[in-house]
Structure formats: structure tokens, C-alpha cells
Amino acid sequence: MAKYQSSYTDKKVSAAQYIAEIMCSRRAKSLGEELPSQFWNAPHWKSYFLYQIRACPEAIKIYGERALIKAIKDSRSSTIFSIKHKTIAKLAQFYKKTEITHHKEKWWMSSNKMTVFASINTNNIITDTSPISSKFIGQHIKNLADWLRSQGGFKYNKMDETTKTKRVYNSVSKFGTKKNILDELDD
Image (cartoon, rainbow, N blue to C red; front, side):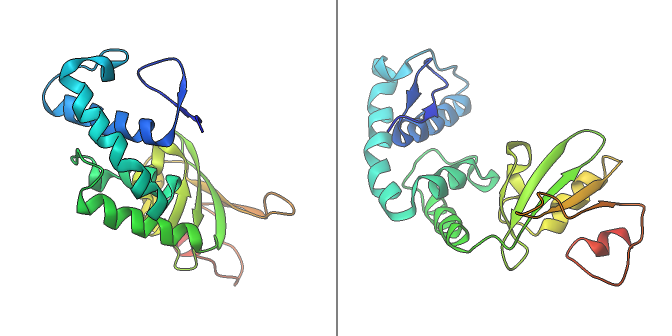
């Protein structure tokens, strides 16, 4: 099913093509090249692109689309050019596990420069977040909060499914005895 926007055509593409495009783009960047529109038709890129596309179905079957794409977009895999690399497999396995683990809490966080959301699991590890903060997926939520705090004007909300927000926490305020994962950031 075509649901991902291609960077090299105006059409939506399958997960396999989307992943193959990312891998080819990385390789081109490392070679100092710019990929043209529909680069997969160029003789120089066709075999590499097809190799990546053929590797995708097996990986998608094992890890799932979301986990595999998160692994590829993870900063720890940014210099990897093949879907079959062991680091991709390890990261995809990690993301598959975090997908299975139910989100413990959802947070909205804001600084003077941006606003992001983050979902955390029972270990307070970020399992999903806004694209601008995707490098924090797999890290403790405190790391994201510290980064946003460094930008000034840090505020955050704990999201609630019934009311959408429970309470606005301001980094300069002190609040009651109830402790949550981000309370320590205000101390």
C-alpha cells in the first residue's frame, strides 16, 4: 500500500520504496552526489535501489513498517547504507519491542523555539515523538526535557485521554507533593 511520500517523485510509495529511497539518499550524500528525480531509473542507481527494495519485505515482516522506519531514521543508523546491516536489525528490534509496550504516558512540551509531544513507555523511555525530536526516541524523557529547557521558556503538559490535558506544568513553578517523571526537572 502506497502511504509514504516519495522525496523523488510527487507520488506516494510503499514502505519498501520509501526505505530504499532513504538508503540510496544516504549513499549518494556520502559520495557527494545529488539524486535526480526518479533516480531508480538511472543505470548507476538501479541495481543498488533494487537491492534495497528486495531486502525490505523480509525486514518489514520481521519488525513491522513503523519499527523499521524508526530504526532507519534513528541517528545511530545515519551512516548505514544497507537495510541488512546488523545495527538496523538491532534498532528495529528495539523499536518493535517499544511498539508492543503500551505507552505509559503522553507529554506535550514547549520551549521558546518549538513545541513537541512525546509518548513514553513504562520505563520512561520515549517511544514516539515529533519529527524534530526523533533523535530522542529510545532515550529517557529527561534528555528531551533538558534539551528543550536549554532553549528557554520550558513548559510541559501531561496528556490525558479523557480531558486531553491534565495540568500545565511551568518550569518555574513548584507544585504539591504528587511526584511524576518530570517534577524533578523543576527542582
